Image 1 (cartoon, rainbow, N blue to C red):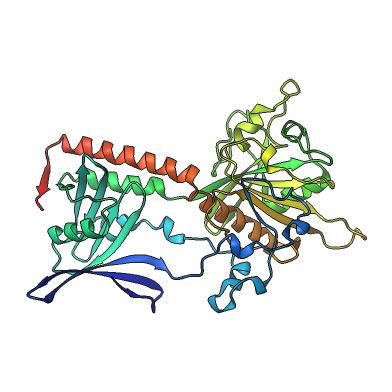
Image 2 (cartoon, helix red, strand yellow):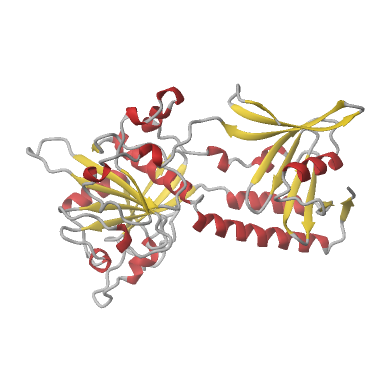
Amino acid sequence: LKTNSNVSVQHIRLDFGTSHGKKVGKHIELLVGKDVPKLSWEAITYHGMEKKSKLIEFDLQGYKYELGCNNTMLPEDKGWSTIKFDISIEDPKREEPFYQNNFQGKEHSNFIGIDSNADTVILTTSASKAYLKTSKQSFKFNIASNLKIKDIKTILKTHYSEYIPNSMKFIRIKDPQFEKELVELEIKSIVSHYKFGILYIAENQTEEDDIYGNETGSEDFEEFLDFIGDRTELTGYEGYRGGLDVKSGSTGKYSVCSSHLGFDIMFHVSTLLPYSAADKQQLERKRHLGNDVVLLVFIEGEQKFFPNKIHSEFNHLFIVVQKLPKDDPSETTQYRVEVVCKEGLPKPFRPLLFEDNVYTKNDQLRKILLSKMINGERTAMLSPHFINKFQRTNKTLFKYLAQQFLKKKNFETINA
């Protein structure tokens, strides 16, 4: 493997074969993405961190914390400090419709790889590119013009034996409907919107039932809702609804929505969802917030927030916010922000919190919080809980596509 890291996109060149001791000039280049500094939980964890936690109960088993860090903790020579101010979306290529952009409507071939001892894979090739989709991840290649499908098979079996055993057969699907299925599959995987929960915690509350039982929020909470997004009447709402009822009002009259960097956002606000005096657990509220990956927690009082008391297999990330007291009502509002998440998240996510965790209420803070929520959910999707579900879904879907199109007999088996 030859690696060239002097460009913005790193290329790994895989050379194929020799003839009488000379390279035959056949190769593929794997596009592996930008060479950017990678964060780790160790990089933002430091001695005495527990003294800094003002809002979240610290050192709970199974959780990781972000409580702010200074530049001395991050290697300056690798550009880590800039991540503190970077509100951009992590891994933006995740939304790139690679198949549509590079193959749809152009001359190319689609193959299904099948083997009794491996998951089904899908391979697409053209004169200059190849695209391998497995149940776990996808690989994008530039290929030499003289590279034939047999050569590509050999290279993939050599370097990606985890996905492509030697016994795997590749079958070229000639049915034009298969291209439409691949486009539809890609469209469904592209994320254009997010739903997040907003949970209000009143003074002295630590238990889940008490928290979900808040019929209304305080004036400070209402101020925060108006700051983070736009209060919207649900009936007749035509934007992204995040599972809320926009016809009959069964999920409340109003909610809060926003948009950020091209993504539509709908919030599930605990106090705006229907309250039932007869239901101690407020299951209607939990039905929505309990299925959100990210919760924005607004806490009042001096008690700490216990993430382990919020029972949900989906809630993986909590961004906890508290309004700071003012000596003078005319002073600008400030908020303290802390982050805690389940330890399955593989790494922290930008933007990193400022060293003192205190922010002035302004548009910059709103963008920081929205970016933090979006990047947090994107990072959570890489945790075992979600990645395993994603892989199982892909495994079943690829196998189903293979079964459906092999029934039609419009295919060609490629011999090794």
